[in-house]
Length: 40
Image (cartoon, rainbow, N blue to C red):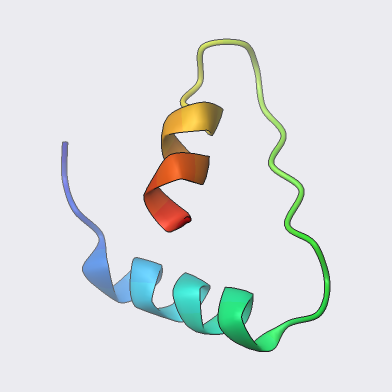
């Protein structure tokens, strides 16, 4: 799997500085749980 460190850095910045919840939606078996665990 390709790492997207630059995108992850901006997402982590947004998560740390936002008071809005992140809603993760997608089709079944599309990697939602993996994504949520990787950013937490």
